[in-house]
Image 1 (cartoon, one colour):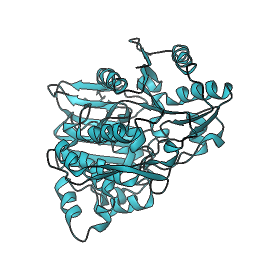
Image 2 (cartoon, helix red, strand yellow):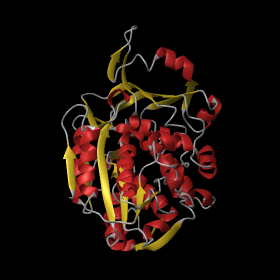
Image 3 (tube, rainbow, N blue to C red):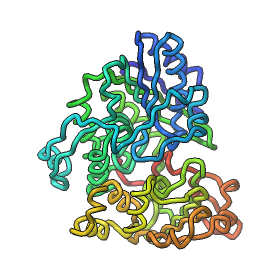
Image 4 (tube, rainbow, N blue to C red):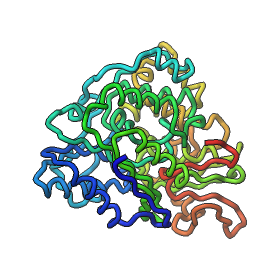
Length: 425
């Protein structure tokens, strides 16, 4: 590992500490052209904005050209307002938009035999490995992959090679990695380093990209009261960079609950969460903490659609969050060619289904309640439930309301994982 910074202070590392460490690291590189691959606006609390800005200033100050390729995956492109907010001070012309269906080059494949081994026989097809063509552009002296390590529903712990093969990757890897995760089961993976999907990314990186000049910059962060606290920054080319970040994230981003939550209320900031594709983190990250027969209320004032693009949105509207077996039956049906061609959508429908173990109510204002109910959720008026459970008056964790009702409140589900005590991660 080239750089390891961490702090046990509640508010984490200061900007000055981060900048000083980064400058010491970056001064070792003599480069003319750099590609930075940071997260999009859905990871605004990663502190990748500040880190990317430090890198940009260091390299441009030394006369190098810097291009920035946000790791969109299947998300909608960042708006200019989002770029200016998250990456303040970096010119818009530095940013390049990734198109996951068209901007990629195939590097090779993960063999079917390997896939069968790592999934315990649940997946027996090969997987094409694709990345954005810029990652292979030899005019770049350095490629910096910036991102946050934290619990994740598909891979177990987000980032590292996932930032390349999903964030700026292509359809086959995106679709099949999501489907492998759905088949293997979120509860067997979330919060863990070594999972079948992580093994896919490790194989792809070691086999096809290890010779490229990739430097990983991985943060571990939280956001108490909406203010970023960067607990650690780990930089390097080897896997020990990821492993150190995973260990710290397991300490900082996983909350253990003594007993199953009967009623959980989650707030989705409207600037971050505009679709159930993103907003369903409220379901993914709490499902291991909610009691059987419990209730999840999702306060979602910004949700206005289901998918991040029109095709995926139409698939969610067509098939809905109907339960794992129902979705898998539809996926295997000969008439469901559209779902098989978009496996990540099928996997998402599995991830967002509770299989009847607990209920989900989306409280919305920018999409109709009928639309919400049509995909399998319960629906309510945002203003009605926000007055009953006011986000600005609730405190993170257990709240006892004036009428005696007990709820567990989470102001941002994207920043952690909640698990009943006794579960081994």
